[in-house]
Image (cartoon, rainbow, N blue to C red; front, side):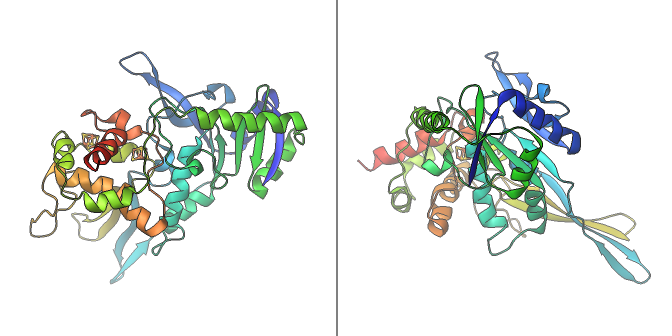
Length: 346
Ligand code: SF4
Ligand code: SF4
């Protein structure tokens, strides 16, 4: 990792240069919630001034830049006595400005599935390689929880990461592309005073997490608590709407559908993100549903987030952003569900 500092006016110049040369996406206010608080989402921007650089957190995660809700994997056409297949997975280089550390940590987890996992996805890899990521640090929202320091103190998954140290940013540079881009503007080597402010900023962020969720030994609790009434208590509240998985930075389950056009000469294969809370998620041919109730389905989501992934990769899939809890109309959130399971064990 190489470290530099950049003044805020110079950073603005840098971002405007990137915007001029590439499609660029950053957090913008798209609406207000019922309490009058802004709702942010990543949208295409055409100037630095459109970006809400000090935003809190986007409503849904940046996952959909890499795993769109719907994408065509391939198209087929019947021509000259044979089927021709067309596959397009290349994407134009683009820039994402402002993802938070937990979102980038979520991407690093998705990389373990779609880049280095058993079945890599050329579509995901193309998007990941062609997206230049400038992460920005932030203090935790009151309901966000920290399951692992790696979720807010990240060292991979981005091209450059900016820590706000007052009148300048302390930049962690993680790619030659970022290093070379930065040559177009004025940067400096960090002074001793900058280093001190950087470390203080990290401590401030670490201490900003007010919501605590204890996940020590959680895998064992989950093994023991498979039949716990806690699942009924929370599962019966669940509306099976699937919003939690849609906004989550790490929920990635999907379905693949093949459609044939009415002329019987063209068809396409589409991938759509799914949610394990939706009624038909575990329905198979013949009509049998392996998880017929909302209780089964909610439990399954928690087992995937906190048990299944942890068994293979020694870490939870969840990064503690609490987007699922904030978006849930039934007021279901990981903190309350996990704490209930723990109480059950006392
Ligand atoms: S847990 Fe909440 S957000 Fe998720 S499916 Fe159930 S009701 Fe919807
Ligand atoms: S807190 Fe909820 S939305 Fe955030 S990573 Fe964990 S499961 Fe996903």
